[in-house]
Length: 182
Image 1: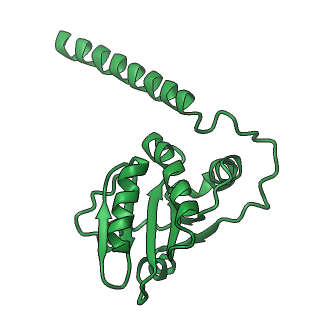
Image 2: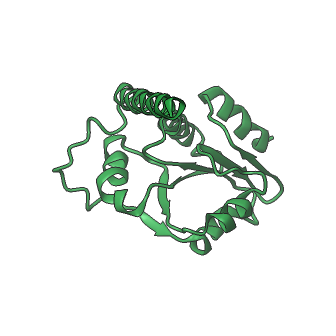
């Protein structure tokens, strides 16, 4: 009985610490704190697809290089690396490279989190949302070794396809894109 009592206290303490640290992390990263939830974001475009609708974005028969990043507004590492995708999108816009940001946020968060995030951060890359509950089908279809963790990035053209289940710095992401340019 004492073991159960102390185990539950330890579990509750750990849960409290994790909750507090996650809240502090999101505040430090400024993920949603600066967003005015009273503002109208209806003009922000966000196309929503199931996996069948997303498939055409995941293959090509051309030399164009596609960089597809899977992210969510609740994912601190995703938010941290998004400026690198935006910077490369700008730097490589004339080099036949296209960027796509695929939000994995829950549908009920599209208007309250995703659209405000797009506007606040002035995202220039195309942003779409994936709304497909059958993750056991679409995750391995994107990459058989993908655990489902985000951020995750797919870079491809007609000849080459590479999947990354990791975060990037600007330099690391640029190095991977350059491998497709050469």
